[in-house]
Length: 286
Image (tube, rainbow, N blue to C red):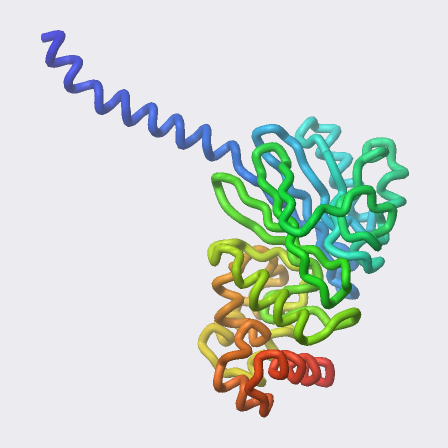
């Protein structure tokens, strides 16, 4: 009888252990909280990224402290986060312009500022590909100069998933203007650097521009992926983190410079020339 008991319960015990392990693992995830800023005008996003296991956290592009600081203060007061750094994707004021004011709050005083060399009060500019950690989250800075020369996208990954914070380099269905760079640089940023990121990586851009981007995109390419993106944007006010790098390769015309239909629409065949023409068309699009 003891032998029979042991044989029948071993799978049950094993199953309960597996379920417990799964529940424990689910609590040790990278958590991303979007904080909208200047809604209706700039439509920016700041992002609070938390390693749930250690509670270590960073805030990305907290350009409007009046909207961001109260969220962080509440989390700190509740003992939910340990803010370790401010991260900037590039130096423009609507991304890095809140650094000094953030540091003036007692809760954030002395925190390092990680970003490009021209970011306000920056204390650390990581090298391209130089990894660092937020608790168990691995962070890889990816240099993507064009929109600004100090633009950096931050790839973050742990055992539960991957996310890339793209600032004003990559948007859902679009890309940033070439303020400090060239079409060749944006082609490299999108179609070499970011295209090399794992396909299942979720994209978190610096602005909510999806409706405007897809309106232009569908004027160039009437594809099913673009129609799906258009339908989603019409039904959802916020689209950040809802699409992956694989999705962008399908519905973002700036990542489809080799597509014959897009080449036909631009009258160009060289990828860099297609990129340049697309940006010119987008700039003039009404």
